[in-house]
Length: 370
Length: 109
Image 1: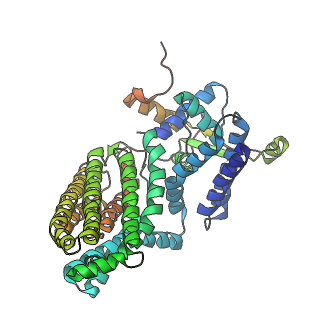
Image 2: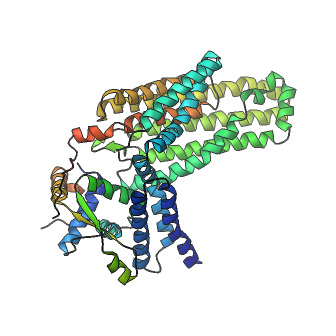
Image 3: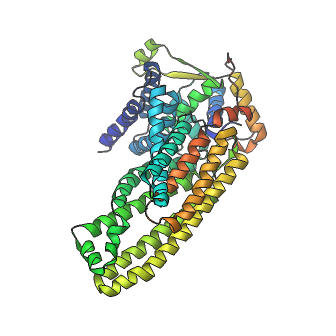
């Protein structure tokens, strides 16, 4: 059994390397594949038989995924980079479009604002990243795995949660409609599944963020501290636990109490939900503003890139803090990661020149070995 | 300043150099770093090879493919062999002068 697991695990690094090197130049692809195959062979030859090889290999693959993707981005052709940059801009674009629509109720304005956001983030994300995301071993061990899990859970969760609107949930204010809707085929299960998945995804994403907290730095400049991450975590957790928990209680009350449940739902629950979302929004807003201050003070990025990063965090902070009052709902789940993505996209895009200017290394044309 | 893994790679490389191993491959470096750390440290594949490539571009390391005939004779894949440059040693020394606590090697009495 162990031997079979080891064999499977050892096939994973070359397989993954073939995936993320697809479409790159043959020389580049060949070099990376050869290095990985050599590493796996040496590791297999070197191991004591009692060591958990399969787990080691799996962890080494997962931990390296962010670096693999960043490396791929750095070596992509212009066309490939454009496609990936556009993909990075989709979430911020959707968030801005959603938020704009809630404010203006005009589809055209939402579309325009969404496209502008998508283009801005795609432009920034298309640059080669040069920042080190993880500088301590603890962060390196926990961060990438949590991010991968978060992405795997958050995507479907947003789709499911997004398919259930607050109009569905309230039944247009008629308690009988509420009850009928809740009892209708699978709605309760779908609703609870959506929010559970969404909560789990966000929690994982924030664990990852905490793991990275204090670790994002560019050659000595600390940008992201643990405090903003902790604040954001508390904010989102507060929204999820208090907000969604109370909504679930409200649904149960509608089922149990009929008309009384509706009164409970519309008064106590809605008040509690609003309060939870306001407090959560403010905490997340403060966290993003702290990030903006940190970027402004320490990021070595210069010019419009630094301004772009700060603007993303400031606007994100203000928007997220204001969302509970203006347009409460699951959409805030989109705004928060979108602002983070946009801010980091701008930030990451400006590291190369800055790290050189800040005393980084220069490439000698003919290095001499020791 | 070097980032953490760059420092570890140079430190491991210098240890290997002190054992007359002038060239080393990626897995050898990872194993030496684990020995220095005294725990189960294992640099992720992507992280290690991306860092090695960047260090080579920065002039801290240089590399070459070994002779294919040698690999074939030993029945294993061909190794990419790395070597620390003078610039790499200088960068390592500059970093340790600025932050001596970062070194993993035992201090001399």
